[in-house]
Amino acid sequence: MNGFWSLLEPLGGLVPTSIVAAAVAIVFFLQRSWKDAFLWSMGYTIAVALVAATKIAYFGWGFGSDEFTGLSGHAARAAAVYPMLAYLITAGLNRKLAFGAMFIGALIAVFAASAQVALGSHMIAEGVLGALLGASVPALIIARRRPARALIGVKRLSVLLAAVFLAAVSLKFRYDFDQVLREVAVELSGRATPK
Image (cartoon, rainbow, N blue to C red; front, side, top):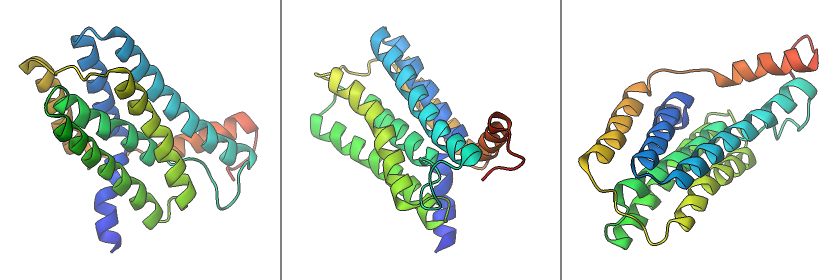
């Protein structure tokens, strides 16, 4: 069963989700949706920074416990990017289709978070809280964009599809962001080793 979860775990990885997040921002710029571009960029950045802060607090100063070592970044990033990607691809189409696509995006995020729990990287609470934090970003933007504006033009769709392709290709590249956070935590806290 670990093989199954190992296949799903990269879906929330830093590289593929960052590619999709950048594509979402580009599409908002192409739509001249300046406020959405700003909200998306800031919301996503704040969510990732909050995840990093919880991990630095744990690794550097021991805030948390063995049951809570920080929010799941995989869950937060996946819950932010995949529903938003699905929404942008289907925006302006049949409302049921758009919500169905967003549901599929949310399911991908659930699988990414579940993989973290199943593989022992996170406890359930860390995955759930990370996913809720991430999901708040597209929720804010989608709630603001009623009625949905159509994603008009091949250029915008091309950006999203190129991002999906690059994200899929990048799934095999693993970047240990937690190791970077451990090093930052040790440097900031003055500890010899991370908790």
